[in-house]
Image 1 (tube, one colour):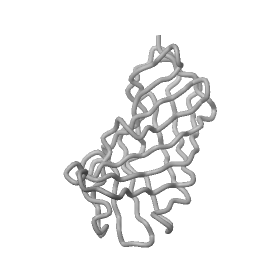
Image 2: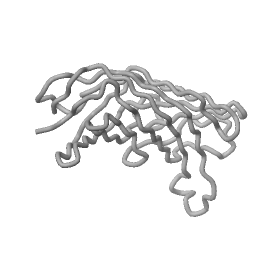
Image 3: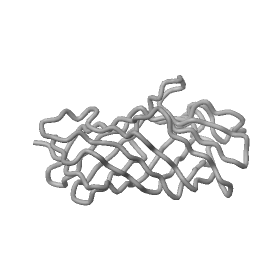
Length: 186
């Protein structure tokens, strides 16, 4: 893998979503979403050529603004930072690299309820969530994809069944990388 300059700043809108656990899918009629009008991440990408894809980048900060749980504000907080950017494949014909962001842990708390919950990979205390990403060098857009990760809601407290431990979770966003990075693979 080859990259250019190391520092990156990402800004975008983001959305967190919950879907019912596998056992409840047959009777599920509702979904829970917590959209954020903006989010921002910053980090670095290793410069050079011949680099391994795992850990090619590090996201040191992640913040979410103007989030809502229904009609009310919600607090969304990232932890487990730095998150790791890992690249696993590159399509030369499209110029798109694919991979993951790992070590995710995102807490959500709508202000209208006493509900609190955390998005991550497992129910333990370690930040172990993984989300799939794609990056297009031509546009400088990093997309956090709503499929292909291991995200679930855990540590749900006082959520009245709206969010339950083990419910599948997704995050999605598109970030513009500044400065734009050129990432290729031989």
